[in-house]
Length: 122
Image 1 (cartoon, one colour):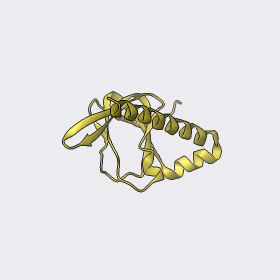
Image 2: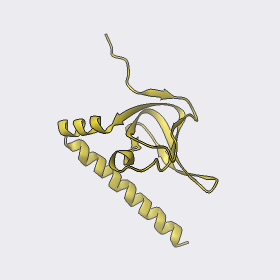
Image 3: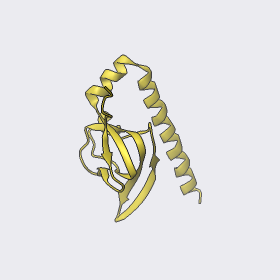
């Protein structure tokens, strides 16, 4: 007997997290895509699109701040929710997971730095 897939299915345009809300978990895109949007002075700025295997909302596990962006499903997307306890347990089981998280976070910082440089040198 095959186990039911994990995660929740979101429909196109459905909100997964809202900027400003309290967060206590992170998310992994299992199928489909999501768009990360920053709401700033009545404008919506797209920060990017994430696909299968990518994660978001991790900052809520590391700091006690509200959500820094809104995330919407682009098309149908299956999203897995991971709380802090589950993440820490998985890292104990497989320490390379922590390295993979740090690697992705470092990549995001590098990309943001490049965007900042482009924006300030125009």
